[in-house]
Image (cartoon, rainbow, N blue to C red; front, side, top):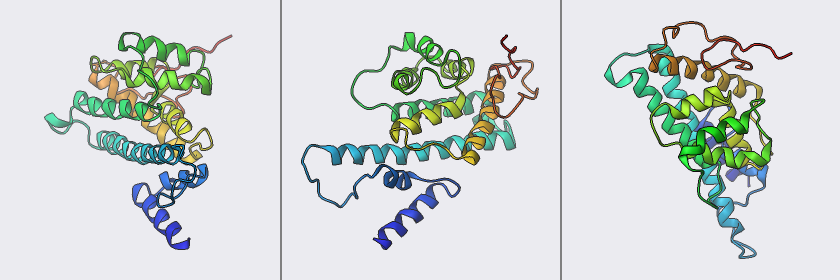
Amino acid sequence: SITRQTVADVADFLISPMVPGPLYFAGLLGLPDVDEPEADGDGSATEDSERLGRLWELRLCIEHVKDVLEAYAANGERDPLSTAEEMLGIVEDTLRRVAVLGVAPDGPAEEAADAAEVVAASTRGGRSGDGKAGQGVLLKAIGSMTGRRGALTASLCSSRLYISGLLEAVLGELTDWRASPSDAELATWRRWDLIFDRLARHAGGDPRRDEDPGDPCCEGVACSGEPESAAG
């Protein structure tokens, strides 16, 4: 109905004014309204509801990452609670949760000891990795990286996945690859990649930490912020 659609639009706007929200994606996927009875009793309505819930949580995680990174970019290390190490820990925890949201609860995650290699192998040769089929394994590996602080950041940077690549992968998984970020949204995520890169270098005590990390698109940019040598 018009009323239901208006409520959905307002809710999406409150979550994120600039980009489509979870209820938009629910319509794109053709998910049933939550108040409609389950027709065939095969559990599909419950599965759809769970997916919509993960889309809502993804948007909240994205907003959290945005708040932390943009606050750090604007204000730097203001006090003991906003040091690079503390801020990086918050971002890492949120990104790990983002990865878990993109994985259907149908099996155990990869062992943490092998997670870094899985991330590297899944994205070797390019940011998109081995395509849609390998994204589930990749996201499970990222979600399992609960070891030392900085391990997830190192893997995201060395694999050139960064925040933008992770968010693209999770959004694709949750919408069966029917949705993708807009150009403006992707540009924003890639800007966060640069802040994330600088934050990682600050937390790691890199002496080059204040250098310009390079092109905002992050294509061909190593974790240190220096462009990689062109192949061939």
